[in-house]
Image (cartoon, rainbow, N blue to C red; front, top):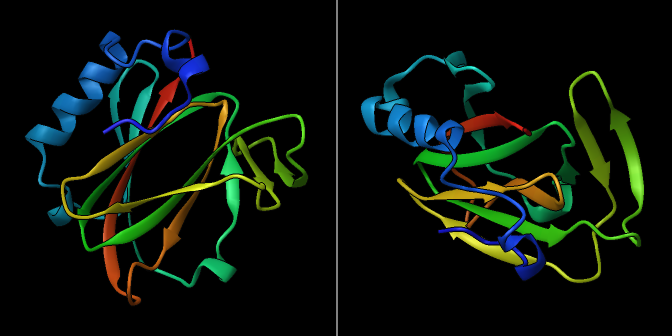
Length: 151
């Protein structure tokens, strides 16, 4: 599944070699059994395995990145994932340039995608996203966030 906006459909090549190496790494590794941490995949591509308990939406924040795409893959558990297009109206609330993470107030128009084991969402630098939200009830998840460097 790819949730995006039509104006971005031709801008990015989601089948570029970097993305293919990420998908191959996911197929070859049982991420639910890997220890938390960073795993280098290929030039400009790395995975972050993380475990956490999902939170109510009111405790989650929209974020975006400038230098990397996110491939957010759920290895275990369920999560509600918010997505919105980054527009000129987006209100920046916090910046972490060193970590390539920018937080925003909730935009006016949002979409939610419910993820289960094996599901993934690809988020471009032109999109806001709100991970870690509970789906029905709080639960522990194992997620892999693969960072793909913008060309």
